[in-house]
Length: 225
Image 1 (tube, one colour):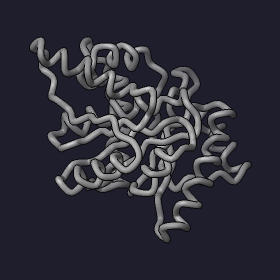
Image 2 (tube, one colour):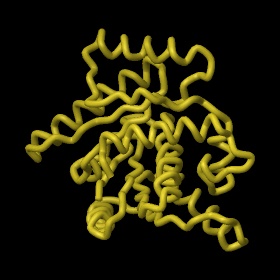
Image 3 (cartoon, rainbow, N blue to C red):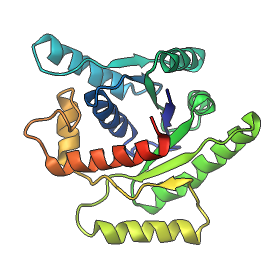
Image 4 (cartoon, rainbow, N blue to C red):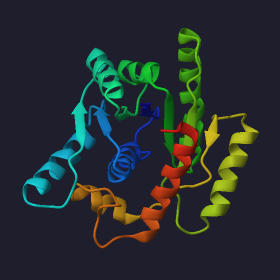
């Protein structure tokens, strides 16, 4: 199965939140998913400890494989879980370091969540340069998929059009830009606090759930897993 790295060269873009919610959907779809937490902040690992506690208290949640791993251990676990039929999702640190490069080298796909601000949009170019160098080393393509994240709920269509125009003007060309985006909704924070993804959270936010599922379906159309 695929190994997917969620990466950015800066923090605060919503990587861990995206990892948690993408993995939650894959799990709820009845598929095997393994999340590897390579971020020194260990946000996903902390979230999973809350989830495990909630399960032990009787919450109707499915357990998820989450492991904190870096360096060679990260690559070994990713390879093993992929061979076992798991979709592997790696949450990278928000900096260019050895852990991020190790994850990128092993990945079939890279997804970068990107808020719509000039600072965040410029960082996509930095990530593209890193991936380009790694592609040359391995002589293989590592597609970069961009999803607009934390988009303001008002005037979001105009904001996305402006962001795409920014990319065009500055010759920043990810392999794929998802047509579906994720708005900046408070339910993402609330669900993580309870060890859940938005698809597990009650009261259910249909808009947040719909956005995540639309992104998931579009991603699966690209990745095919």
